[in-house]
Length: 243
Image (cartoon, rainbow, N blue to C red; front, side, top):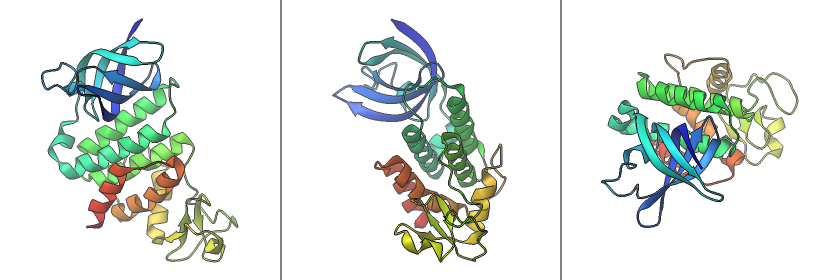
């Protein structure tokens, strides 16, 4: 049985000598693990369409255990991402957490639409880091994992401190007195908390985001806790921001 789908490649891994295994996000079947036969070969018709952050039309052979890509047509490769290493780095980090948090094989147009809009924003924004942080907040919100930045998650009271605590285990913002029992707590600027709270209310990325790097850094511990898996692309992007 074959099916034609529009998909976004979120992740690519080598499989054997010539194949690639892709995490492919589709409307029709949700997030899929598929094998692109021979895609590692430079002359392969599947080579370009199996690159991460690629949007294409994919013909799938739906086997009982494994799904294979038999044909592909490239629709979008986000050219600015390919020309700008920093832009590419944060886009790949976004795709990495999207691949981790979106559930397997649950057909839904929402995640596909959001991921495409997010990648287009990172690709075209004059301040791509602002777009990337907005995209990560939106992804957390869509998946139901958005931390509570509106007040102390322990007491429910407003937090007025200049450098409050965040805790992934607690689920968000905490006052200094409430944070004592959480070993994963870390301090942030109050401006970062305000920015993350407001980003969750926006349908598109802001023109500018003060302390964007600090916002990105504040979200990484939450992704580590939520996904409970290695995040090499996210860690690499964070290290570059801290240089």
